Image (tube, rainbow, N blue to C red; front, side):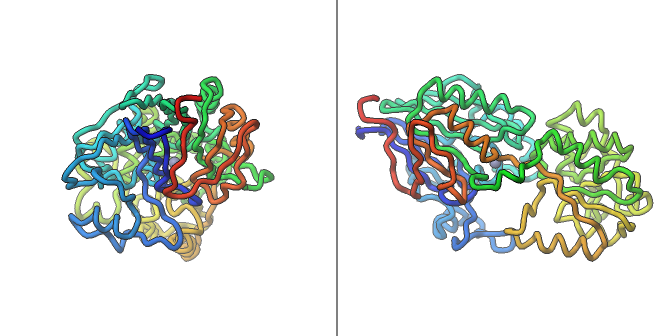
Length: 438
Ligand SMILES: [Zn+2]
């Protein structure tokens, strides 16, 4: 039996995303999140260079993309006792799940489970898995002498969760990703208030926007619809947009704007499916059409698109520039060749990929739009807490130690009012509280 329960980070250190938080009490062990980290200098796979079929585990381990934890990967001779908990379904938190042995227990929220089911349908899931659990917010999951209490937080995807982990030596909390300017800020503040009431020794928090200039506050989620309306009203031209389609509330916002503009919402097949199944009411009101891309003209629409769906082609969009509000993801930009955007057309970037200049595809997106004379506008709302909200949350939580993760500027994270800020190292173990209690 070890002296105190410990934790270790296998990702998310000095980088945005890829958090993999391993908590071990000797009697129970849990891994929070299992995403891929993309950091400069580290080898990575991309959409061209891929792991070899049936060698995904070996290839990811060999280049340091997946952590060297025994007994958890596909083909493990002896399974470890580890369970995996998922905070939310962004790729930087779940991207490596498909490497797990299908018998490793995975826990997630009800909304995450619903999302995953539909992601499987559109080919963006994790594949078959035998041991999947849905946790109930506020109800403890007991694993050995660890007690894990999941609680909701607000982020730009359904089902985001933070966790309180009680160990024999102390209590740790893990935030996942969170914000205070979404549509449900009260969830996030309730989470941090609960930490303050519980009394926690270690808070492992994301700090994506730590160090950001507070003079440029980001837009709230509620302001997105207004912003989209502002840049697109009075245009008689084409209006395109891109979103991350796991952000179901954002799709609903575009649906509402489509109604205000009297433009028919047109969604890519993948987004159409997620919207129809995960926001059935907003879907029924919006009655969006599905974008039949050039390749669907040859292969047909994906089988998951219902027969009743109204299909719209690039030619339809070309003929009626002011009739549609069109989701045009990066991968489908070549449809512009047939759409032939008219003068005054606009492309609204609302947090779809490529997200920013760090992605080489971003420069390419800009040159495509320039080539076709389409104006680029940004109407976005970050999924992450502003610096001032981070500070407020840390003050509410009052941890003894704040461990800064999921940020390029850990040193800019707020110090807890009566505790200390620690910049954790990758793979180093940290004690949670003191042996024999606190
Ligand atoms: Zn996230």
